[in-house]
Image 1 (cartoon, rainbow, N blue to C red):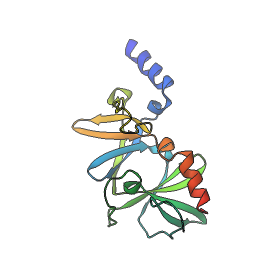
Image 2: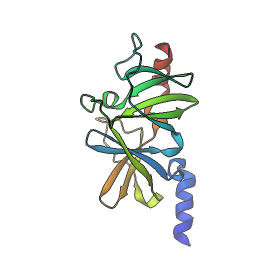
Image 3: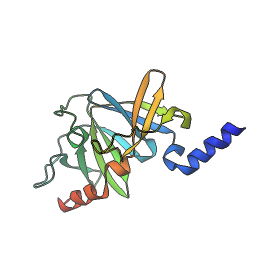
Image 4: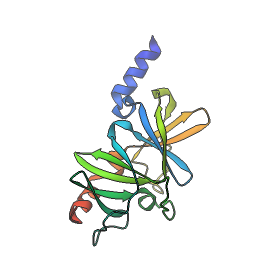
Length: 167
C-alpha cells in the first residue's frame, strides 16, 4: 500500500510522470521518447517549402489539410550530424502550446508504456549541456529512452522565431 501512495505522490508532484505512454523515435544512434498525448499524427517526409531567413533547423513549411505547418529537423537542432532523408524518415506532427509543428526524426519505432519506476531522473551535466528539456531516462529491459519534454525543447523563443519567419 505504501508503494502506491509514493507512486501517486510522485506523479502528482511531477505531471510529466503522470503520462506514461511515449512515442519512441531515433535520432542518429540514440532512441528518444515524447509523450504520446503531444502527437497529432505521423507522416512520411516530403520536401517542405523553404522560408527565407529562417534558422537552419527550420526546414520550411508544409500544407497539412489547410494548416501551414513549420517543419523542424531535430538532427540539425540538436547537432546530431548531417541529416539524411530516406524511406524511414518520419515527420511527427505535434500540438505544442496550441500550435501545430512538424518534427523530422530518423525513424519511429513504437509506443512504450513506462511506469514511474522505469523513469530515472536525467543526470546533472553542469553547464556543458542544457538538460532543461529532459524528463529523464526510461528503461525497458536493455533498452534506454531519452525522454524529452517537447514543450521545453520547442521553447517559446523558437516558436516566436517560426512566427518571425512568416510561418
